[in-house]
Length: 172
Image 1: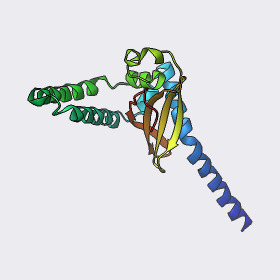
Image 2 (image 1 turned 120 degrees about the horizontal axis):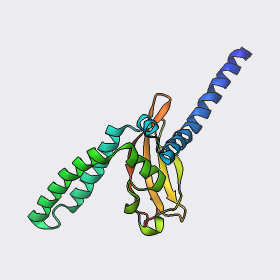
Image 3 (image 1 turned 45 degrees about the vertical axis):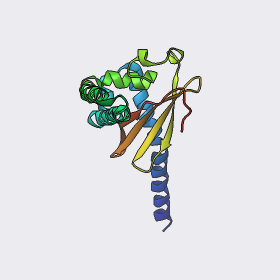
Image 4 (image 1 turned 90 degrees about the vertical axis):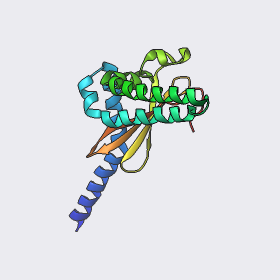
């Protein structure tokens, strides 16, 4: 009976360790691959179809917020922007782009405000249940960085989405 209890305790300890530590290891592994530009490692750690869907959804929401503000001509422009934006997302969301997002906080460093360029980005892991977690980016000066959204796949994790936050607004 003592052996069974010891085994149950050991299994619970291993599971608890995995539950607590695996998101941190996944984020560190992704950040390390991004730092050295290891495209093969990024391909394994990122679900690119899901990431593209996340980007398209954010673009479509931004376009929807702009619709109707400038009349029919504005609606036409929004429809064109939505179609072109989705095509651009499909072509440009690559391992290199993800590497830039994880390493610098933007897909292209030139998109960052001047004051954030060159600042280190740190990541905090926030659990969102058993199957999801969010890595919240913060720049050295405390400005809000992007959020990376992960989904559990087997015993590992894959990046499936992101949110580009306004660095001038505090984290909600």
